[in-house]
Length: 59
Image (tube, rainbow, N blue to C red; front, side, top):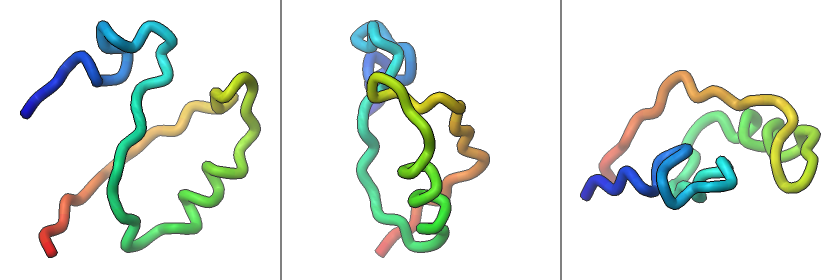
C-alpha cells in the first residue's frame, strides 16, 4: 500500500536521503553505472539525479 513516510523528504526521512528502491533494470544499465560513478560526499551525490520516466513491467 501507499506509505508516504517512506517518500523523499517524508516524516521518517530527516536526513533527506530517501530509501532504497528495489527492482530490475532491463534497459539502460549504462545510466545506472554512470550514476554509480558520480561524485559524492558523505554518502550523498553532489549532483541531483532526476528520473524522467519509469515503466512497471509484468513478468
